[in-house]
Image 1 (cartoon, rainbow, N blue to C red):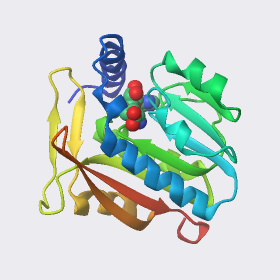
Image 2 (image 1 turned 45 degrees about the horizontal axis):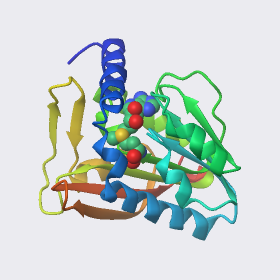
Image 3 (image 1 turned 30 degrees about the vertical axis):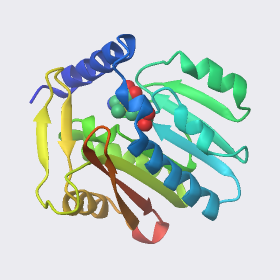
Length: 215
Ligand SMILES: C[S@@+](CC[C@H](N)C(=O)[O-])C[C@H]1O[C@@H](n2cnc3c(N)ncnc32)[C@H](O)[C@@H]1O
């Protein structure tokens, strides 16, 4: 494993290269879209209006799933050319170029936080810092949707590997990710296994709630 600060630099360079070379296949990934759609519906069912944060928002494509009653904030390591267009098309929107783990900016509180494909690339030694920051950025009863690589329903052992780019890739089993979220005081409302046929991979979307009772 690399030192944490060295890994954060590598992560940024690796994602920047993917965007510059149009290798950001995730920007069209329908499995991730499905997870974001489930989340948008859950937020709308629970809150008539509010603020949502999309950590690792990429080009900001999930913004269009939230109607105009919600302010959408997209946060990503890499500033994206598409952000300007989204800002022109949508009133309640802003983007922050930051590393979620190390940003010192006060990012405020949100009714909903989405992390769709970002957490599973982080350094495992920072999982607690990451999830604590998510939890502390949610209002009471706020919703968190975590979308991660998944082994699928039948496997109960996850995998961890370092990709050729140097990025970490954690594939979680259902048991592993649920245990991690429970340990960090998230109440799991429902888990969704999503199979993306085109990319032959499973994701899992875990919809969670936090409330002050279990802090
Ligand atoms: C697989 S992409 C998913 C993008 C988007 N969620 C989607 O579904 O299209 C992961 C994104 O997370 C961003 N990212 C990775 N680590 C991050 C961090 N520590 N802080 C902020 N963004 C991060 C990357 O730059 C990349 O845009």
